Amino acid sequence: MSDNGALLSVRGLKMHFPVYKGMFFRKRTGTVKAVDGVDIDVGKKETVGLVGESGCGKSTVARCVVRLYDPTEGSILFRGTDLARLNNRELYRYRPDLQMVFQDPYASLNPRMTVGSIVGEPALLHTTERGGALDDLVSETLEIVGLDPRYKLRYPHEFSGGQRQRIGLARALVLRPELIICDEPISALDVSIQAQVMNLMQDLQEKLDLAYLFIAHDLSVVRHISHRIAVMYLGRIVETAPAGRLYKEPLHPYSQALLSAVPIPDPDVAAQRERIVLSGDVPSPDQEITGCPFRTRCAQAFDRCEVEAPALKEYRPGHSAACFLHDDA
Image (cartoon, rainbow, N blue to C red; front, side, top):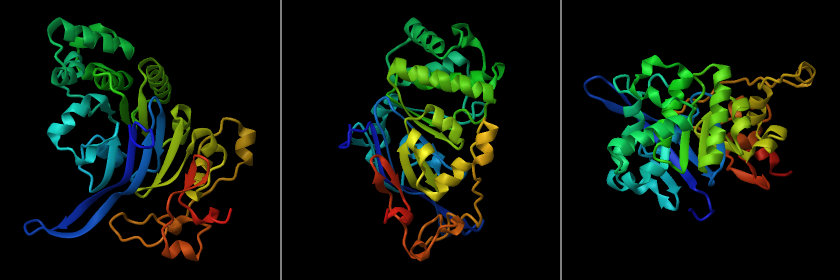
């Protein structure tokens, strides 16, 4: 565990990608700051939602946490150990406890492998289970996610999108991890199937004492499953709060704009709500940004926002925002 008691504690995470031009004589011409100083915590048995529009760096954060990317800077403390400083051999022992479910169930499963081989592969790499014992483990895991163990001999193309995502979830669960990074796991599914997968994930959390970092761009989805929510904009966290508090009293103008676009089933309530339409352009992540990254789209921006970048600051217990508007509150 980290010093603050979190299972996962990310501090100052940066992931910068170099930009090159030229076919033969490649020259570095810039840097894309996909993630630019992210702090986020996930406690044991907790679900933390990470939300933001497409291109804000959510998936890059996920890939850095599981070390599919080597971060440019920052620390990734998992049970007190900084994963960012480990080599591949040292990372191997932490892989069983830190797994990932990917966004696209059609692309994340090997079409040439059977379901049994896909789900059982992590166990082959990280456990001593073989033969009948491995077969039993795979069958048990498929049952946990609501699939018939007889499906072990089938191939991914024989399943629907929702079933494929259950297979991806089974692959992550076969090692019985403590933390699962979910990179928009339901965005490619029909709405009715989304609800089934989310309910399954909540049941599994209770049964197996799981923690989730749940990445999505749909705020209504995140509200349903998360204990706490972090809002991300252009590679940075701009607000964090308990889920209920964020939806009731968002502090950052970007969070307010996102929440104003969430559909409300009651037409009378929806008619009374003011829709916040953002103007201006999103700064390019390969450009040097001065001041607040959101100021070009914020109707409440003032002079200080142009020259100084606000830090993520706690304004209420457990509720932090990166916005100067609340400094005098």
